[in-house]
Length: 151
Image: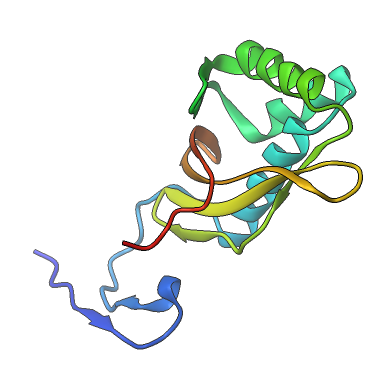
């Protein structure tokens, strides 16, 4: 049996837990850099007006059975993701998604804040996503609109 010790430190949230276990990590092989690149590719796909380029970005970022759950809809699979992203482009022409925070990640999950910005830089929508990974790609995105207030 492996003995694990968790130490808490007064540091950044993603650095608060220090696992002193020397057992090899068996979580998916996604580094922080790769995680950020996947998320940024996903956001670029969401705002990409060119259908062929949007499809390339979607295929690069998502598993074939990926799920995107935002408040007004759920899209499952690459074709539904592509159609959903196209619908957003139709509703918000010229808008782009922008990551508004660092990516906070542990194990196979990450979270971050984003905005949908118009050509003039005005944010039409803001929110945050929780992302789950599998096989080195995004498996699920659960989106929330607006900024969460502390309670």
